[in-house]
Amino acid sequence: MEFLRDEVGVPEKEIGVAGLKDKHAKTRQWFSIPRKYEDALCLLENLRGVRLLAADLHTHKLRTGHLKGNRFRVLIRSPKGGLPEAEAVLRRLAERGVPNYYGPQRFGLGGLNPVRGYKLVKEGKGRGSPWLKRFLIGSSRASSSTTGWP
Image (cartoon, rainbow, N blue to C red; front, side, top):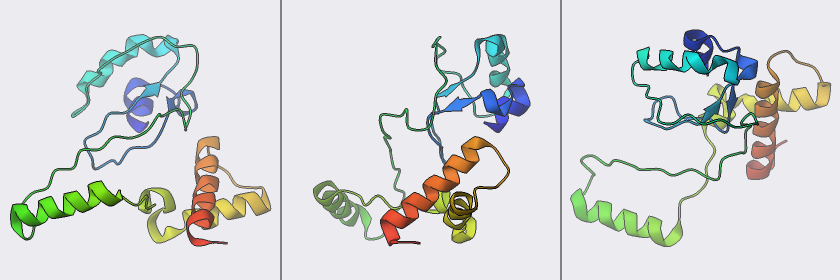
């Protein structure tokens, strides 16, 4: 969102996203901006590593949860044990599935996001964007559903 805010000039509160992306991964990100900023989208081509793949009109702002799901491609380089071991691991994953672990992207550095979200709920105060508040509260919910906290 920072690149839309800083490079295109769209106020952060007017940017809609359906989910978060790993900033270290090569990803596709759907976002929405008001039509009045449509002409500024050409500025995205000035950003290294950014390509605009599609632009369509819609009447609603994207919100967290509007995603149907995530798809991943994983590139494995030089696996320990070579190709036979890598294929065995992939077969086990195909049979059993992949656990849905939450990590730093949800719990934050030092794991403090659930605590911050819990305080927001209990104390009802805190500054920042409404999006950040929802994210922190969601982190608390995720923490309690996976670990029994608080």
